[in-house]
Image (cartoon, rainbow, N blue to C red; front, side):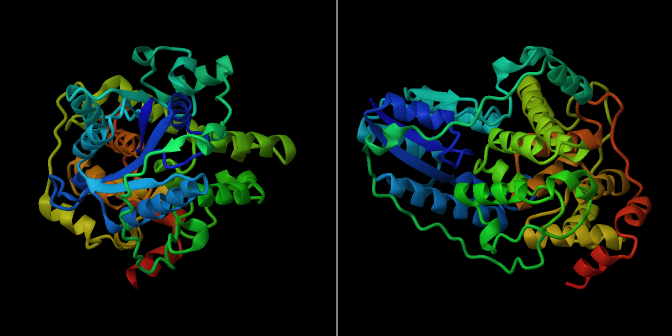
Amino acid sequence: MKSLYWFRNDLRLSDNPSLNLAIEKSEEILFAYNYDTSNDKESSWGFKKTSQHRKSFLFQGVSELKSELNQYGHSLNIYVDDSVTILNNLVKKYKIDTIFCESIEVYEETKQIELLEREGVNVSCFWQSSLFMKHQLPFSIEEIPNVFTEFRKKIEDVGITPNKPINISKKIASIKSIDDKQLIDLNTNLHDYRKSSFPISYKEFMGGGKTGKRYLNSYFQSDKPKKYKETRNELMGVNFSTKFSPWLATGYLSAREIFFNLKKYESKITKNESTYWIFFELLWRDYFRFIMIKYGDKLFYKNGLNLTTQNINHDDENYMSWIEGKTDDSFINAGMIELKATGFLSNRMRQIVASYLINELSCDWRAGAAWFESQLIDYDVYSNQGNWAYMAGCGTDPRGGRFFNIDKQKKMYDSKSIYQNFWNQS
């Protein structure tokens, strides 16, 4: 069989079941990555869907993936095109029997598969981005609880264990490679990220599977896991929170790789509330994925999953002041300046600025979600849309939206205005 493996949000060789399936079933294989040109188009809110921050981190990892494949005697053929067009052309050019790829169950990504199949292309998709596989869940997708706590308790009660991470199939060293000789040099020019809490210009924070694994190993060789819950709400610096999210979002690391490193740490070093909270956050990530599959496009509607008619207004002037960090609140401005300058923001600050946009500036939550999509190096469609809907009261939580008292938050997390002054003086 002649196959094409299409790398999507799974830019790694290890623990990639879809990739292994392609290798095992093929006599010849073409490895392809396409940066879809739709990413550079303007969103309906008036800015590019993908900022240079996201592109730089993404292209770092693509470059590293290319080097890893080279070590096995293969090429990564890199394209910048419409995904459906380029893949369809490659299928015809090389008489490809099947395209293998990971399954991304969101409207735009699902539409790509439908369009390929409409052209007669055989596509084999495999769901693999969650910690737990769908068949492992103690309920069907349709029966997933609409409250996270119920989801978590059921998962914990039945005691299911994620599948162990797998190595790349040994067959990769002997399978014949199809080389289209497409080695586009993606632009990884970097801004100055020295002030960032995730400085992608530093070797240890760059994009890529090998880099992600090195960081993962160093994290669990430190004392950070046992202090995670104490530090997770800090606003700045490279040592608060796990910092796994950028590598997870682009598929440089899998959730399973993190989980089993965590279990090893708990068995050899310590198991406490902080280590449990790392697992807790991985569960939240899974929950947003499965809720998106359950409800689909509804999570992109103005009222989301809210069955009542919620009055959601939007003020363009307020929205632009938020984006530019020019609101009447210096604390909020600090967060927005950091986001635009670095492509990263602490989880706590994300919640604070989201609440401010929705509740203080009376803006459409989807506009906030779109700006985060554009800027964040750890943008993940499931978590981003789920979190914004949750904040706006348009998600599954029956308690409605989340309102953060900004003055109270500042006193709790930036009482000496260190963070505020750091970014407002940039």
